[in-house]
Each structure stands twice: as C-alpha cells, then as structure tokens.
Length: 246
Figure 1 (cartoon, one colour):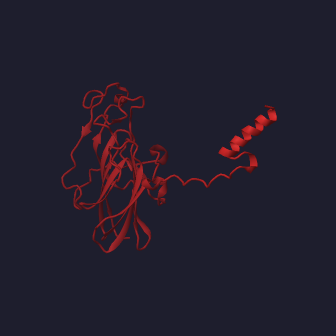
Figure 2: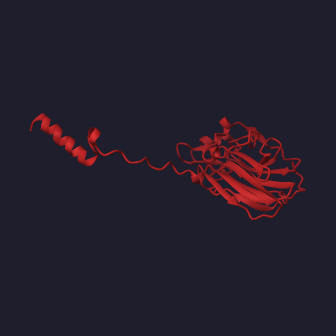
Figure 3: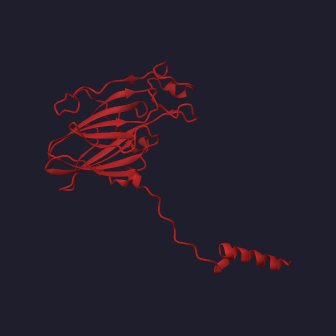
C-alpha cells in the first residue's frame, strides 16, 4: 500500500467516525452551562405581618435565622457537610420593629474544632457570614450585617492552635481543649440583655474567601462579612439585631 493510499484509508476512517478536514460533520451545540442552582436556595416562610421582607444570607458553613423565636430559614445544606458553601434567600412577612436572631456555625468534625482529621490537610476551618434584609415594598435594604450586631461565641476550639498539627487529636486533651456553652435561656426574646455580647468582628472578603452562592446575590455595599474575632477557632456564634422602621 502506497503512502497516499494509507493516508486516504486513514482519512476515510476518520471521516466515518468524526469527519475529516473541512468536509466532516460540524460539531454539535455546546452543552448546558454548569448547574449552580443548588448554591442559592429560595424559600418563603409562613409568618404574619403587614410588610414583606426578603432576607439574603451566606455563611461558611451554616446559619439559621429567626424572627423572634420563629425559625424563618435554616441553611439547606446540613452543617455535617464538608465544604458546604451556599446562599439562602427567604421571603417572609413581619411588622416593624423586627427582632432577628441568628445561629452561625463553621463546620467541625468534633470538639477539637478541626476538619479533615487524620488526612494530610487536617486543619482548623474558617467561618464567615453576611446578610442583607430588603423591604420588598419599597425595594430598600433596611438592614445589613455589620459591626453593630450583638454576637457571642458559644463554641471555641481548639483553644491551642498547636492542636492542628497533632497526629491523633483528641477533644478535651492538651492541646485540643475546647470551650462549649449552652445557648442562654431566652436569648431570642426582644428584651434579652445582650449588652455583654461584644464578639462581633468585621472581616474582609480576602480573609473569608466567600464562594459558591455568594456571587449569586447582589450585595448592598453596606453589608459586611462578620464573625467572631478569630475566623479559625470561633466555631459557633449567636447574633442578634433589631430592625426599626426606616
């Protein structure tokens, strides 16, 4: 077989399979874009009031929001899920003033406060939270997460960051000790004394590294990423904010 007939035979085979040169079958349409719908979960809470609001929130890794004692939204991805980064948008009715309460949690495997325990990337996870509240009637953002919120830390671990490099970390033993407190009784009530809650700290986007769902919300320029003073060891926070009529 001559070199020409070899090339001809090879091209014929390619033509049958894929098309050869300019005479082949044109490529099909591009596939669908990646499905990112699971990174923004939209719900409606069954609450009562004269005003309709929309609350947008993103957390690393998990949050729950309450209107007083009433749960209005809980992160749709369980806190037991590693690398669960998604946003929640909930619509609900209420009256001014609103008393909003939040539970914020970073993922941890156990009370050591670590994740990926026993793996090469064993580490302390880092947290972060941002929220905005819109009065849908006026279209105005009437509240945002910022340094004026009242927050307190109820789980902190590890108390010694050397725990991160321990080959077999055990919660409650040096250097993997932790602090865990119960939620204060009545902390969601409007008249709860939160004057001692001073843990609220503003963190930059470069520190938190928000992703997956965060970019699906158009954040008000006043909304700030908050957490406790230490993104790595502050694992569970309670936060409160009162929203007065504009």
